[in-house]
Image (cartoon, rainbow, N blue to C red):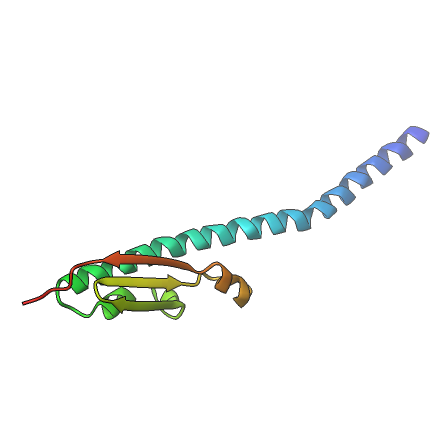
Length: 117
């Protein structure tokens, strides 16, 4: 009978250890998801900067082209600037806390020679 009590206690200990590990697993998953979202934001910013530069080279409005190349959620989080032949896109990735998104903002630039006569 003493053996059954000891076995029951060790099973309970494993359950408690699993419950203690769940917050750590959730934290690790959240960090991994945030890194993936930030990487996706880099890809979107690169594409938007390239679209803006191509539009600039073709004599079309670069800012509008860069913004239109972004999905709807990203347009609200993007800042597009055009200086000479440089199109720069700054994009804040989605994040649960605004301060985190601001710190993880990514920037990409595209260059083109403006179309001329």
